[in-house]
Image 1 (cartoon, rainbow, N blue to C red):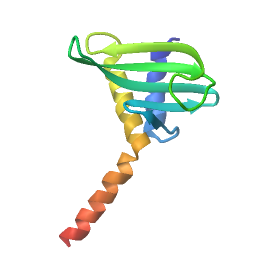
Image 2: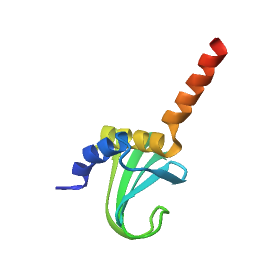
Image 3: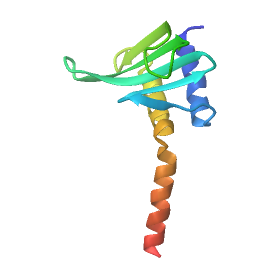
Length: 116
């Protein structure tokens, strides 16, 4: 088993809201299971003009990114790695951390009221 094998389960547990994410810094989302911390982030390579995603695993440390004992990492851009899986995990972690489903639902409810 390798780090990429975790992505489908992590994505599904995020979709089911079984784990929560928070955003301690721009474009980086952190969650944990027990003393294992994982983070997914988005970056932009100015030389290539490409977006990339990174996924890191730590043991211990606080809720800030890069704290704890580093265990493993992966980086993917659209030319290599699990780009679509990391892009989807980043998107779901962002939705979770920012509470976007509730915000969108609340806006929809308010618009319905205005249309009555």
